[in-house]
Image 1 (cartoon, rainbow, N blue to C red):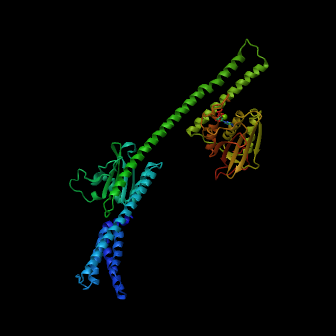
Image 2 (image 1 turned 180 degrees about the vertical axis):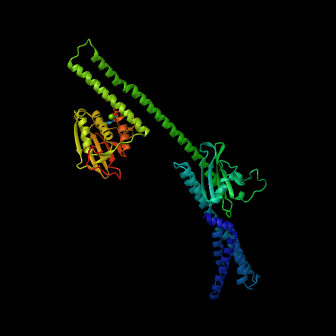
Image 3 (image 1 turned 135 degrees about the vertical axis):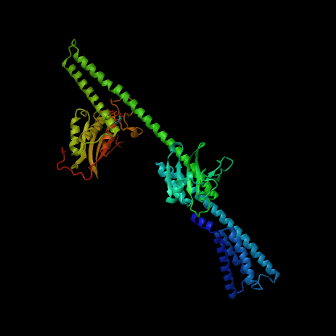
Length: 535
Ligand code: ATP
Ligand code: MG
């Protein structure tokens, strides 16, 4: 549509030529009809030419068609023929009627055309604005700006569009679209004469805003020589608050008509949309930064709390037990001695686990955790862990269901052992003694799934999304089992380092279910012959 407008803009005379052509065609048609029959009011056929000209080219060509019709009818079909004089007075009336009807019909049709065109332009404007707003919501600002530049270039049929920011948070941001030669002109816009859209007013509740007027700007070293580029290079300032933060430079094709009022409105709205988008991006970045700082702070506080509380408790109990054992003046029975020694062992183990969890977590967060992988038999790993934790799980019924003939899996034995142990320990810790814990391993396409399901209280739905965060523990009534909320965070880090996934859910029959899925192996990594302790 824009292209048609440009063509008609540059070939304004074409409308008139076509209108006269149409009148000539109708004249021919009337002549042909007259040869066959004598039709009254045949001159009305000219209205077709007038309306067609009005709809296609507007009111000017329609008036031209009306006048041409008046003259042609008079000249060719009213006696005396081939003269512009008229013998009968009533013929004058008919001719005058033809002219008046032609002009009025033409004007009405042209007005309709104008209204339709305006509506179409408004619609187009709204679509472009909508597109610009949507393009600017993209995550990468530079890409969004380039897309907006390209969209504007196509919409306004421009040779090039450059959007550049020199102030505010977006300073230095630059995006462009268009032909190389024209881009060169836009890039060097500081040195070239140009037209600047300025002096606009923002809308108020009572008044529509105005985009402003094009003001000619000449660089100081080019006095009085507007040159050709001045009419090709246009700039629309992007304002944020009181200051100008950027410019939209537009280079028109040499033959393009000047921007219409609708184009000006579109350009100034796009400029204010860009400013809003830049501001929004800044606020979003600030919010994200504040959130990162807040989380780091939270993590640090949690770490300090852990170190001060969770490390201290086992340490004091070790010191107390060891001190008691060393007391010379008290005679301990063998059972009491064993109790002290067991307490020391248990607390030392807790300390050991805590420290290794903390270390793992810091390695995971630093991104330095690289699994030492080999091909292993998963059922052997499950048996290993269950065997090692027999003492821990002694009060529960443990059911192991490993699918037969599981293929070997490419994994770090120590790390996946730790993940599974964490899940089983949790299942023991958070479910009543005597309840069932099921450990299932199955293959599904190219992953193996390991599930630890229990019949305990399950997990409250609001806790599910945060369960794998470091230091997160579900708050429950009554005394909570000992723990620091690191186990699942470490398990998640380890599984993800294997390219796997871990998640938790509640079982329909009651209880929680924790599942991790590991990819079977890396493509191109040939499995070692014997599954098991292969290197
Ligand atoms: P840590 O493992 O570091 O000693 P922890 O067990 O509290 O401490 P996680 O293993 O990360 O930490 O578990 C986080 C929380 O998830 C636990 O505090 C617990 O409330 C909940 N949870 C974990 N497993 C289960 C389960 N099987 N049933 C119910 N709740 C569970
Ligand atoms: Mg745990």
